[in-house]
Image 1 (cartoon, one colour):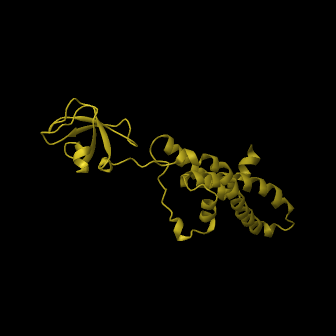
Image 2 (tube, one colour; image 1 turned 180 degrees about the vertical axis):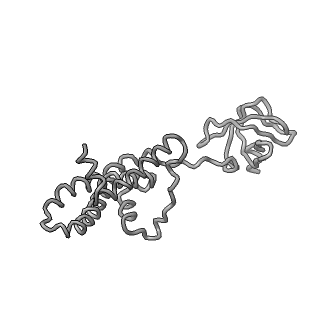
Image 3 (cartoon, helix red, strand yellow; image 1 turned 180 degrees about the horizontal axis):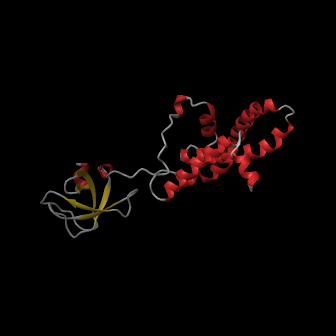
Length: 208
């Protein structure tokens, strides 16, 4: 145990150890609800020709994974690789003066190896982080609905959206007199944000 602590607190493993400590603290804050997993996420313009590590990661299909998770795994794998590489490489150096240089090489090599390892581990998770944008109520304007109430007046009525919004019950109204009855098809023409109601007209009136 003492030997393990000496290794992880000595160069070159010390640097990944510090970064791993930051990662552990971050995820503790996430678990406690003090931080959000997407706190450092940002949108990347794919048409801008992203290059480097970010471009390579995107080209391997993990663009939907939270940045915090990707960075955390890269640091974790870098820490593991630096630990084992330091145990394998540094003892082979005949001159102690070269340990600093080789330690730097170990850190760089560990980081390089961590990138494909991160891709392998996160690629199967892409489906778990698909973001679905909520539909705005104003987007329902122009859509067809089916009247559920017996009649529709200027103050009361109910309808259910047909198609992509199936199952969404809306409070609707319509100018009177009208022939709107339960089971009829109607078209949503406006949305009153203050009263959270939709104005509808019959399909026949909409076509004419």
